[in-house]
Length: 325
Image (tube, rainbow, N blue to C red; front, side):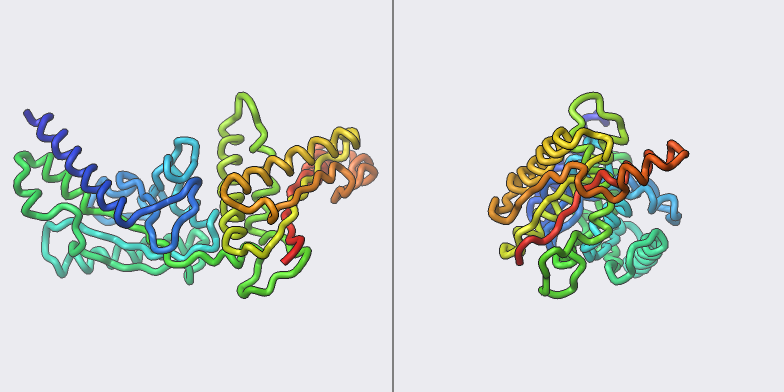
């Protein structure tokens, strides 16, 4: 009988949450947020207890994997914030409806301020974070509805649905994708360093066809999230035309290098277009190994094989630049 009650509660709770999410929450593919909406926080990643939270607990706060394109694995909130550096968010902490209302308000304010401090200590810019302790006011399941439940387990589960963290997107400064804080773009301007560096490191993971390692999977997710940020930027700046340029190692035959990098650049351009970017906004070039950072001569004169590999790895890169604005 208890199991039946629990299943009824579970259905009721999930239905309630679904209704709330349909009204106020939205995350597009691979973590592109919509301004004024909420990130999909995985509730059990922090709300499994009521005592004072520690940095360890805050470190466990995760986003729902299927909504953020993380190959079925949750992504840490702090990681998402680092990979989406142009977002400003509001942290909202809710308690359940047990206890004194004024105490719950103070408690939620204390917890959310502590979470904010943790994120700042982890390297998130303070100006990107606003915190609000919501107390028990904005419950999802009312006290009257909870009291109708027959067992303590059911009631505790309902209270757990009321205890939650919400992360609301306040601003998305996609102008900064090309490192500007105003609308003045210029030809040959390249992608902002916080996006350019991880994209260059990880773009090859997009082309791993079989037996990908966990490292390949994580790298692919990182690259996709940055490509999606670029897609939104282009959609919000329809006058901008970019060039996607791919460069490769020096050791490869020149003709092979040119063909393979052209194919990779085209695939990334096609990915942007598939996300709604106009084809006229995207051009692509395969540079092969014609413009290395380190020449073959520089690499070959090194005696340390690890240094040689490092230098050639730096030649493999993806450069996104403004071609027309």
